[in-house]
Image (tube, rainbow, N blue to C red):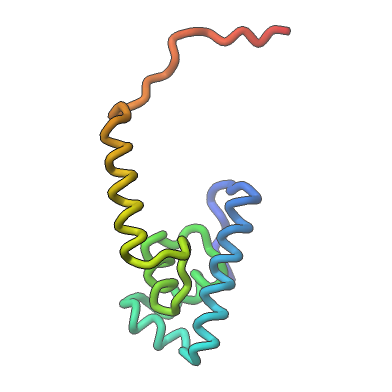
Length: 112
């Protein structure tokens, strides 16, 4: 029996997570790996693999990405060099942006 979701997720988030988890399950089956074999390779429990394949939003994102990488599902459709380039570009852009964002001090007039 799945755990109840403790917080509300948007339809988009739930649907995207479901698609991602279905891709992981499909790739695992196509590679003829059992859930236990995948769990052993990822260093996690078989139960966590099962929860990932069901699209449980409470699973750690790192576990999702590790399992996906093992079975060959790429979230960004990029190789390591492309990801490294994206990381460098984003780091450079983040260095130019403010370190924090403060709430706006102006009041919005929405009494139409």
